[in-house]
Structures are given as structure tokens and as C-alpha cells.
Length: 162
Image (cartoon, rainbow, N blue to C red; front, side, top):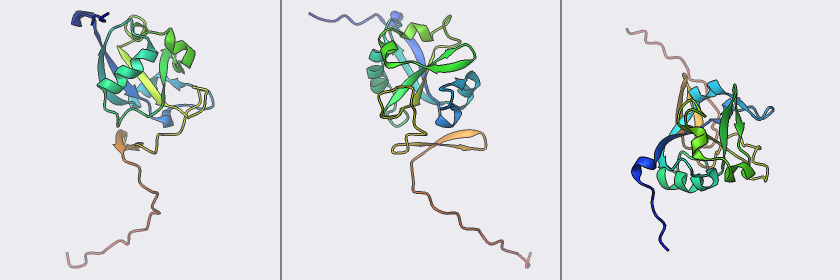
């Protein structure tokens, strides 16, 4: 029995973003919606709107850059003024269409790195073994993890001859 692929006009484009952990509140298990201003784009997916989030994980691996997506992550959903975690058992019920207008402001899905524990609401500070998010002058850049090197003061040099 062959599975029929959906026609391309049935597919939707959905932008995937990664939320840096420093914009997530571990204490309250949430982030304000304005944290979207600090997300890193992982690209977009072309998927069917009826696809469930647990099935979307395969599409994310197939269609995005693996260096940007954390090895383990949870989905976030904007509900009211904040983003909440989508629990593992909700991933079999929540569909891509729930992240599209009119359910959502724009066709976008946000993910956040998670810990290895069974509770999907527990997150890690970052996925240091792969990539570290670094904020510099309001811009977010991706940086490969390097060991912490103590800073050494640089002497000020005088150019008396000028």
C-alpha cells in the first residue's frame, strides 16, 4: 500500500526559531512573548497543517540545519502574554495548524533546549556540547563552545611619537 504525498498547495511554510535560554524563566516555566525578538532562526519547513508535533520532529531534522536545533528540545506555544511548554503527551494532539494564523500571530514554531529528564518542562541553560548562544551588542550569534579562558588585562600603550 502506497502512501500518497499531499499536493504542494496543501503544504504550509512554518518558520522554526530557537529561543536562547537566557530569555526563559526556569522559575516560572515561561517566557514573555517579546522574547521572540531574541530568537535564532533555524529556517522554515514546508509541511501539512494537520501534521502533529511528534511527527513534526522528523521534518525538523530533515528540513533544517542540525547545528542550530538543540539535540533535545521542547516546543513552546504562545498563549496569552507568554510562551508555555507543550508537554510530551500534548505533542500527539497539537498540530502544526495550531501555530498558524488565526491561532497564532504568524506561522512560527519556537523550540527550547531541554534537559535529559523525563519532565519536558525542565530545560537546560544551553546546549553547550553543540552550540552556545552569545549576545553581543544586542545581536545574537552562534558560537562553537570553547573552554573558559580567564581574561587578562591588556596594557594601554602610549604613542608618544604621534
